[in-house]
Structure formats: structure tokens, C-alpha cells
Length: 62
Image (tube, rainbow, N blue to C red):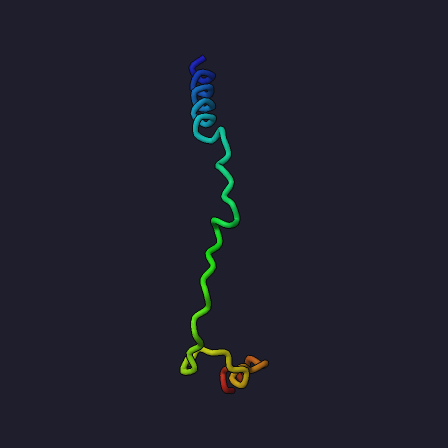
């Protein structure tokens, strides 16, 4: 009997805690848009295809 009572209490606790799905979050609340800043010509992190090698051996300068 005590096992069934404990199981019922556990089921009631789960239902109280997880009985309802969380509210949906609108897509517009999950996305932040910002304007693009001016381009920095001195940026060393820019994409430079001449430094990209198609072969792993060339990447390691072998």
C-alpha cells in the first residue's frame, strides 16, 4: 500500500511540475537585427582566398 501511495504522490508532483508545456516564444522575440557598421579596411581577419589552400599538405607548408 505504501508503494502505491508513494507512486501516486510522485505522479502528482510530476504533474504539478511538468503538467503544462511552456509558452511558445515568437520568432520576432528570438531575433535581433542591427545595422551593419562601416567596413574597416585595416582588418587583418578579412577573407583572403590567396591564403586558403585546397590541400592539407600545403596548409602545413610541407
